[in-house]
Amino acid sequence: MMTDLHHLTEEQRAIIATARAFADEHVRPYADQWDRAGHFEPSLVRRLGDLGFLGMLLPTEYDGLGLDARSYLLALEEIAAADASTAVMMSVHNSLPTQMLNAFGTPEQKRRFLAPMARGELLGAFALSEPDAGSDASAIRCQARRDGDDWIVEGTKAWVTSGTHAGVIIAMIRTDTPEARRRSKGISAFILTPDLPGFTVGKKEDKMGLRASPTVQLVFDGMRVPGDRMLGAEGQGFIYAMQSLEHGRLGISAQSIGIARAAFEAARAYAMERKQFGQPIAEFQGVQFKLADMATRLTAARALLHTVAAAKDRGVLVPGEVSMCKLFASEMAMWVTTQAIQVFGGYGYMKEYPVEKYFRDAKVTEIYEGTSEVQRIVIGRAVSKPQ
Image 1 (cartoon, rainbow, N blue to C red):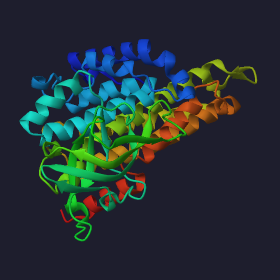
Image 2: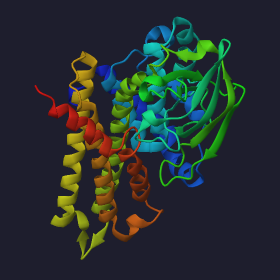
Image 3: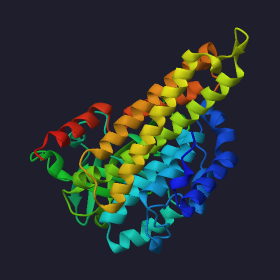
């Protein structure tokens, strides 16, 4: 189930072809090996940067490509169909850190960080969650206090994608006092780099899926942060993060579609080859119905994503629609990968075949960038408002 090329521009077709060729040469042949070893391949960062794929949404003045959201999502789907771990690195980088810097950074901050990020010289990460603050992100306790022109930061961030190799981390840190505790209104955004005194990469998580994408804790032990590293206005970081999560949720939707597409294509090919009772199992109606439902849900998720992305590009996005994309695409990916294992039967449960990896990689799309439950809350509030 490839993307329908008939309704795309020549530039978008070229982007798909470039992403697919890159994935076929540099990602797909090694994805299983990286997954088994839990290995992050750092050379991918510079290679993606050389293609412009780490600055797809950034203005050309910062060495970005200045593309629309749909073009970016088309490329991301191709990478995700080859390896979800590589796709999540690309997605996080292109959405949260670069978009927050571009939207809220000072001219000096943009000059210093955005062009190297677009070229793949600096990998971006985002640090919001903490061990005791997941879905309730406004409950974070990581604390900054003033010390002259600097800030001294204490605390721990959790589940930071690419945290082992990131050169720029946008972190949400409390700047109100422990006595005031204004929840979301007391949180500010900071631009962190690994060279800051007191910055340490902590525990690396041993995950079910996305094993080639490092997820770590970041520990701030009296970390000294220069005053010019605050991003935007003091106390506005949580608002910035919530606004920027729209980009991240669209990216996770494209990642979900890429995973599901790979699972569907593997199941379809296997069904045509595997014979039982003297014929390919693809000729049995029960298997055909599974493939039909998989293809339908996959096509629907992609259509929803690109409709919403086009609306976002036009500035006419309806509240809740991004959450609809993320909810539908992630649950679709989990369902499609489950059905793919069923088509493979016992072989689908074995690591020798690819669908068990797709299944493992799909699960987290229902969790990060806002769980399915959180997405339903966002959607429910949006559709319950008076029209």
